[in-house]
Image (cartoon, rainbow, N blue to C red; front, side):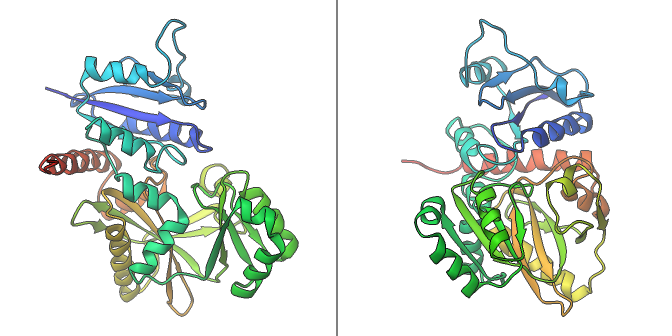
Length: 354
């Protein structure tokens, strides 16, 4: 009997369109002879819409952004109703950004006791919040570039003091980031104080918490992690953006980035990257997948930049490409992740709550 698989995508975040592209790619790789696949679409406004079973891969993201019947139930009620009717065996979240990979949806699925693909509540929320992530990395003893952080209220009340602190602790150029967003949305490079203020104001449009880091002259190298309690790592890949940094357009729109896979690093550096990626995965209590991003200097000094607990997942995204070059093609990667999600859920069912 086929497993009933719910593809969960869309969402309220700035990465809504990225999620739709991921869902489209997933339908083109899934085995329709093995799974009964149902689309579960979350609109930009946060409404949940459950579609009819897919019988073939979709050809455009427009097919996935379907409309609601005028007399249908509103919000998440439709999804809850469908649980009784369809009895999903596993949910595959393909949500990026806020209310998608930050632990909120994962917590909802935990309450419903539904198996799902990918990281749990802790790994998702800590991996989404760059400040919490960095603090956990410090506990794990992972080297990082100097950074500081603050919230919107502090910026409005003591902007001059915060700027002075940043200029004392950090050096230009600085990178300013929303703490809780991915795909480089709202990220800016600041070469002086005027640009720093502009960058903070931009980042505050996307989040109330801001991270500011010292820029470092280094190569950007990434490594994919796959597994549960015994994670494995892929070959490393190097990002070579032709723009000032690896921003949103470089990732998704203008093809202005070169990828070197495997990255031209020494065996010792690759071993260090693998070890650090696994340590980051484990300190987050990861499950399923993580992409770990690093800076590697000319002297082969390594800094962990961040991890992404639900990285870009189209066939041309870095995470699947890394595994393809390690010998695991896209369709088999998806199958592996589904099995890992079911495995982690089965393990949780052994816990006693009274």
